[in-house]
Image (cartoon, rainbow, N blue to C red; front, side, top):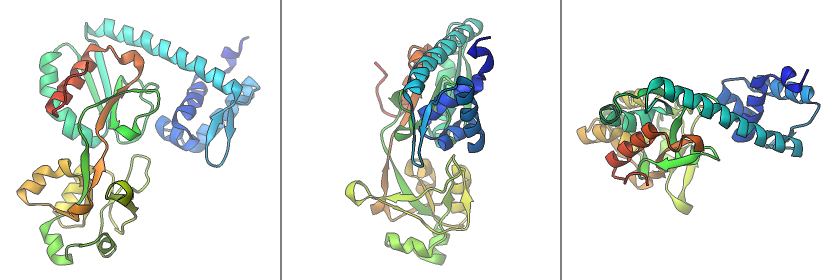
Length: 305
């Protein structure tokens, strides 16, 4: 009986994801597991292989020589499996096949919603699945063709195509809130306000960023309300619950109609452009390239070359 008969395929997937993500915690989030389950999977795999695959420390993990060699072989294997499944999907679904994309909520609202009508017109035979998910995931192991994230969140080793230019993060509040509680004039004034907490996909609370370059600051703001959804945050801010921290382009309509006002505009922080990212095997997916081109053109960028 070979080692393949003893080793659980899911444990191999955990091992590769840990190396891609750089930590047990990040890998657990991507795989939808607990950190304990991720650790047990690695321990089980190393015991069955009778080899140490990872060096562990309190700050990071890295592959041993044996682990590095195994990871390279597994990556090639996963790519071949993915390519085989992709060919099967394309054969079954038509010339342009099926396209599965994982996007975070703001990108779905700002990029996918406006692009859908034109995409359906240009690719009438494509089966398109959009999954809105703010958690960091491994799109390859989860079976997605591509994902949309901010540039600095694109995993290493992925092909990334910018979809937009940079945006700005701003603090904003309803006029009624500012009338009742006053308008902050300096960043320090936020300590006296109710700030709507932004919950990230990994369930951590986001520190608000202000300024740019050497003047950039990340501060922890006070607030009793925590929300992990942009639309709900905007609704709460418009209702006068508190000050929100949002992409300026996401609240362009609210700013124009006057239901929200930007505060401390001189401290607005630049945002990374949105990127579509995918593995190299999906680079020639015709429907994906069409979707990327549609989004880029709608956002003032040229087609991919």
